[in-house]
Structure formats: structure tokens, C-alpha cells
Image (tube, rainbow, N blue to C red):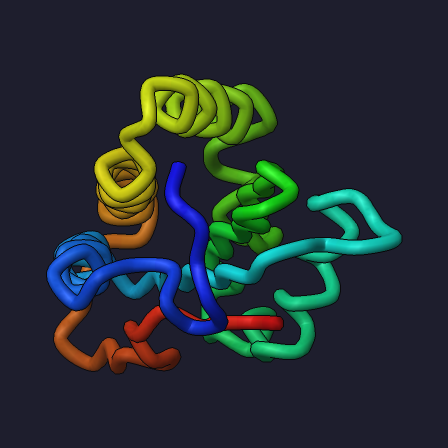
Length: 149
């Protein structure tokens, strides 16, 4: 894995690939997917940091409580996937564990961007199944990658 400077986690092409995966994931659902990337999650574990970021990004404000945050701390090699209560009630804990295992495997193989994009698309497929797009659905949250410290 290469070293990154602040906000240079991904190349422009890699960023575009990830943002396109987010748009694709959200295209046919009312659900929302966000990616938050930072160097470190110091003094807390990845899930605690994801909970903090989830609240800060106001992801609990979606109409159906179906927002999903993919949180990654690059240098610490930690990540968490956090779904709001609406989607969590539909998919259950085993779904999140499966997504985490898939992402972990891609990271081990050095396929960081591919793993993130695949994870986001799979989350999107689940959101589409449980929260299909309706004509009055709005894109409630931005699709861009959010960068932390």
C-alpha cells in the first residue's frame, strides 16, 4: 500500500471509480451510501469512530433510516461498515460481517479501490432490494468521498 498525503488517498481515476460505485449503488434505491476516509482513528476503535462520523455527517436523517457509512482509516488499516437502523433491521448482523470479510480480503490482496467499490455496490444491491427507488425519492446525501484528518 502506498503512502498518502492528506486528501491524496486516491488518484483522480480511483476517486471517480469509487464515486461512480456510490452513484450506481444509490441509483435504484432510496438508501444512501457514504465513504469516509482518513489516515488514523486514534484513541478509538474503528466502529466507535464510524459512529461518531455517522452522526457528524447526519446520516441518521434519511427518511427511511437507510444510510450506510463505509469508514476507512488507511494508516491504521482499520475500517467499519455501519448501517442505520432501517437497513440493519432488514439485513441483520451477518450481512455486515460478510461485507467486512469481503473488504478485508480485498485489502489483504492490495485491491483497496476495487474492494471499496465492490463493497459499496453490494450494499447498494441490498438497499435496492429492501428500499427500492420510488418516483419521489431524493438523493438526500452527497455522493462524494468525505476525507478526514
